[in-house]
Length: 367
Ligand SMILES: Cc1cc2nc3c(=O)[nH]c(=O)nc-3n(C[C@H](O)[C@H](O)[C@H](O)COP(=O)(O)OP(=O)(O)OC[C@H]3O[C@@H](n4cnc5c(N)ncnc54)[C@H](O)[C@@H]3O)c2cc1C
Image 1 (cartoon, rainbow, N blue to C red):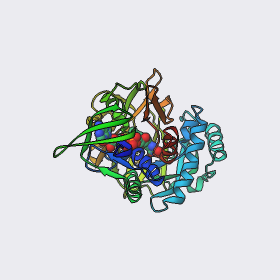
Image 2: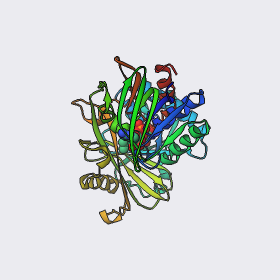
Image 3: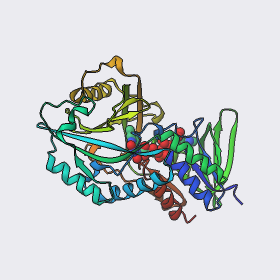
Image 4: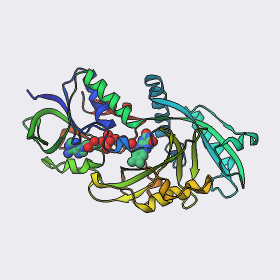
């Protein structure tokens, strides 16, 4: 009999969520993670939003938005200390590409799909909006979404998984896996020595490393054609007192958030194609300049490069394609290789929808 019913590669939000769900059903679960703790990959470098993704409405991803809003409601109930509703503000200027009617239509649809409603902020309140420039300002909309601490949320779920009996091995990197006689034989390198174990099923929850993990398997497993796209955030001093600002970057019309974060301000994100070792992705100076320019376009006094106290860079996998990353689909992709029924790879996805993703993974693996 194999050592485990399920082995999971990666202790990001997806790996820990699958581990918790499987352990709750009484399965013997092990999580193998190359870094010393959970959430050291993408799951601590996100925008830290638990949201439906208002902007996905523009590309017609209604199902994704509805699902994420449903998950947002679940998480608000389950983790009131970690997931909090926050007011979001969308200012519309004479020069903004999306006018008040477009934004109001989008917010109405968002509310219909499960959002919390929205309102126009009266002109009398504009001076209180954290110094937002008022020249050419036509309207400001306020709606509601949620913020979290992605690292703490992932760690909490890992703790719950452990409470249900899941085993975690950190500093443990999968180096080789082979499918023999109805079970996976996994070999890992550790800081001191190696670790070997067997499992009935394997979930590849290694985020941006997903295809590199597949390349370690024997027989070779087919993966999906994906593209790495890095997203940078910067942190600057001061906290926006009124909540989050959802801005249109003047350079290219992309959405950029300015958010209160640990008594400072988090600004992000970017979408820059990336090739190479997922663990080596770093923020580019051009990304930092872009984020500062967007912030300075809307708020005074202007901030310089010296004001940046922290820089974070996360990597997402998006389906490979010719369109700009901003317009690519953001659904979580669950991929199975017909030759290897006891293997499932999770590509992409949202922090917000980790729970429903975990449920789907177990259903597909019949666990
Ligand atoms: C810039 C950015 C902003 C985002 N903002 C949001 C947001 O605001 N809200 C939202 O809902 N979603 C957001 N997302 C999406 C969300 O953050 C990701 O989908 C999610 O964190 C991915 O989690 P994961 O567990 O799949 O991958 P990861 O968190 O990357 O975890 C994969 C783990 O696998 C481990 N691993 C890899 N290879 C091996 C190996 N061989 N052996 C052992 N371990 C291995 C890695 O060390 C890593 O810990 C954002 C994504 C990005 C990039």
